[in-house]
Image 1 (cartoon, rainbow, N blue to C red):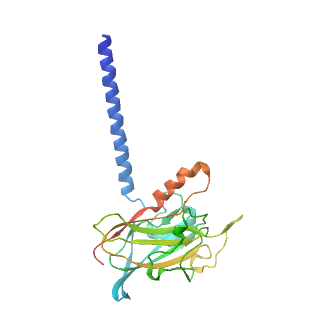
Image 2: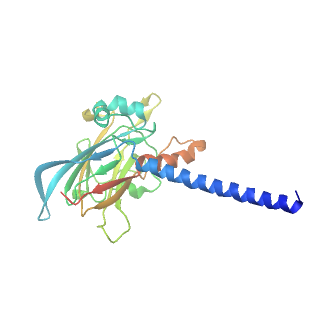
Image 3: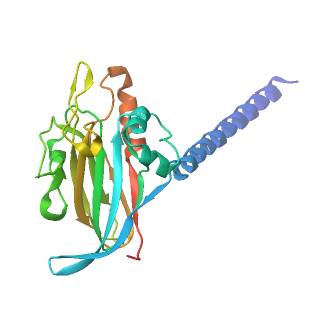
Length: 253
């Protein structure tokens, strides 16, 4: 075999390997997106009622939905066994998360009441703006029976932040609810005064009005994680993978 033939063979082999690696990368990305789309924790559909409520002279049908916020699966199992039964299983990833699912299906043009039972601690918000209540009915959120309009930046464990996609094909919508953290000491979480969580957390209740049908994204604006330097990247991954989700609002109310 001549030197020229060997060089051509090496070039062909290099090109073949490069093409194969490209195909593998594309296949891996596609599989990852498919797995994310499969929604391992399912969907949580709002419960619609026969009641209506009038807001600013307009009547809206009512619907409710309940969520929990947990530091990990062990906390979810200890806190809300009824939620675990409803979803059939614990969260796929054993880290801080909303449960029993993060893909919410809400009726369009409706009065939605959300109840969140929260059990996690917290540190400090990077942006104190997300300590303010925005977009709820009356501009308030009820925490353990008391209405508030904001929380100090160092008293927040997570946020429930809903916003529309930047498109002209659906209505704009923005809701931000800061969630009061559970205090901690050297022995762990400090008991609260909320009987709704068996003194282990806080009960957060708020209402907002959905608009036209579409897909909206909700996420947590709190810098979730364990605070250690070596897991800083995992902190951002937790935020993206466990909190970011879609809220689909079908056209039928």
